[in-house]
Image (cartoon, rainbow, N blue to C red; front, side, top):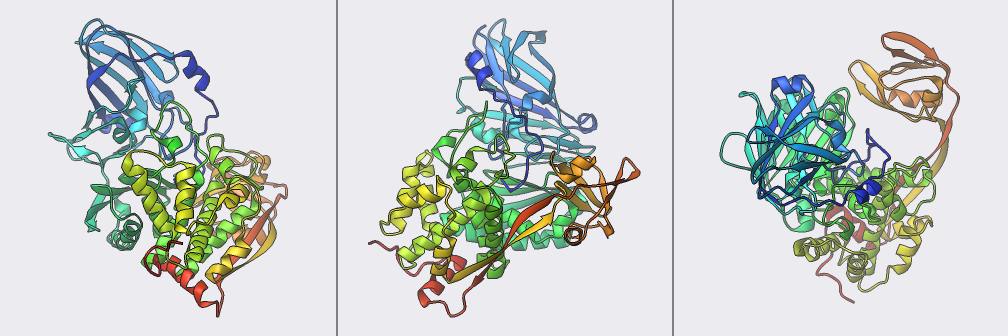
Length: 597
């Protein structure tokens, strides 16, 4: 998942409620779902959901909807969007009741076919939640597909989509006989294959022996130039990532891309796809290939190679792990690194990402990265939110340098990732601390990383950038800057800059700004684009904005924030050994067969 704030965060633990309802469903079979996403349904900002299955008796059927989408570590409680729930058998209504806010109990009258139906409100601005427009629908399986409680997830299902004859349907799910019919071998696959339905553009190309598809809404945003440029990026990204793990483990891969004026910027990974939300202006931004690269790397790291804490996924409540710094942070290391390896960016672009990570970590309170990995479920307000991204990326970079130094560049973090992938995912399990640090030590010729883990992963000591960077012929410089901040998130489009999020304690919120307001000026600085804020930080006063068509002038309190601005650069005339390590990282190469001490 990319570095963004989730729009919907409901800080409720379902654990106590789940403990009160330890009901197990009677077994069911022949499970199928029908999703109605025609012009009538999406015109009401809804999706129609029907589930049918076979039952062998009158024992209660207990069905539940997930509380979250894997990869998006936020409790979203999809059941809150359900309305008009009903159950029937052969046209006769069945008794049902709710056991908790996301679980329904249905009482069949006899063996046979049971049908359940409901409407789902699809108006969320969030890539993990269903969304509709007059000619379009997007949904994740976690939003809509009920599962029988206590019956595991290793059962097949069929999905049918009812839509307009001229509308398209795109998903990574395997096709089934008939129009717009699909199948999944188990519930994990069922919920990890998002859908686009409606009028959207789609094109494809073959890369590394796999079909890579780009599906874009609105359709007009996928111009020929943008399509060709995206495919050119992907021709460089995909092989560089396949080289790390040795295979592309998907039948095809789809980038579902939505661009609009109101989006929750970022991406969400799936096992054979990614869902990206960007503003229209960002379709031409140099950050777009980074987003592609980050989410694509997740097809291996977290969707397949993942901590034992996340194997198998549970769907009813938060699933905690102290290893998001590897799942998300190390992915965030490889995201920009692959752009350098593929030739999309040069080494300076990669070093700029690393410098940004150094600044982010330095500006945050001292936090153990393993602790930060536990925190996204509550979105902490102490300044450490999402710290597992930049700090995890930095730790990944440091480990790569240290492995290459210990092995004289004969081994690398690439080899660690591939060995873990082969040893854990391919054997049907998640990795443990012993697996991770064991492979790190093995790659480094037996060197112990116990102290490193104690100080910098589970501890709060400053990362050893000063001592490790020179091993790769690198140096960094940093400056601490005190500058004014509004405490807002914004999105820019052709009409200007709008407020999308507000910090409750930020200057803008205190002054009376609201989400949806359009910024006009800050003092005498006109605000028309994202980079207008640079001028604001140098000169600021009252803020003028439009709210509901009315132009307002707000007096903002001065709120100064500390920001660390870092710069990473290659050292001229560095030792040959360090240059070899630096070049090995940037090229994805080692100096020979794996080093064994």
